[in-house]
Image (cartoon, rainbow over all chains, first blue to last red; front, side, top):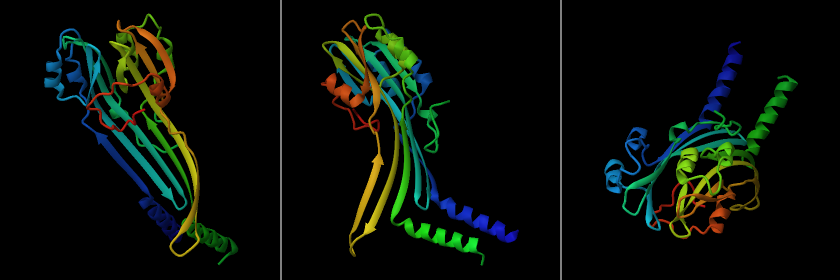
Length: 130
Length: 153
C-alpha cells in the first residue's frame, strides 16, 4: 500500500511542474459607475477627458469624432504531458466608444464590460457557454 | 519483475525518449464573445438607429468614417482551434529536419454595420473582418491608433 501511494505521489509530483497559468492585461479596467455619469446631449468632450483621461484612440468621422477607451484581459492556461501540450487563451475586454457632434457634445455611446469575465480553461471547454 | 511491469517500463522509456522527436499540441484561442445572432437579426436597414445598435451589441472593436459624415462599426470575435503534430529528426550534428502539420483558422469573424449621415443603418455585412475591412475601405484610421492586442483586421 505504501509503495502504491509513493508511486502515485511521484506521478503527481512529476506532473505538477508541467502546468502553468498566466494573465496579461492592457490598460486598467473601466468603471461602469464613471461611465454612467456621461449623459448624451449634455456631457462635453472636455468633461469626458477630465473624467476618463486621454482616450486610447480618436477617430474623425466627418464633422463628428469618436473616442475609444478600453481594457483588455487575457488568461492563459497550459499543460504539458511528455509529448502532449494543451493550451488555452481567453481574451476579453471592457470597451467604451463615445461619439461627439460637431459641437463636441456627446451624442451616442456604446459600452461593453467583459474584461472581468475572462476565464482560465482547457482547450475543450466552452468559455462562452455561461 | 513481471512481464506487465517490464512492458510498462519499456513503453514509458520509449515515450520519454520520443518526446524529443515528436509532439502533439492542441491550442484553443478565444477573443471576445460572439455577437448574438438574435440581436443581429433584429437590425433593420433604413430603420435601426446607431443608438439602437450600440444598445443591442455594445461597443464595437473598430469605428471609421463611412462615406461623408457616416459611420462604420465593426464587431469581431475569434474562436480558433489548432491541433498540431510536429516531428523533428536530427540529420547532422548541428542541424535537424522538422515537419509540422497545423489545422489552424486564425481569422477573426465579425460583422460590419454601415450608417449614413443621418446615423440610420444602411447595410449589415457578416464575414471575416479582414475581408470586410478591405471591402469597406477603412481609409481614415486614427492617428493615435496603436497596434492593439485585438489584432486589427
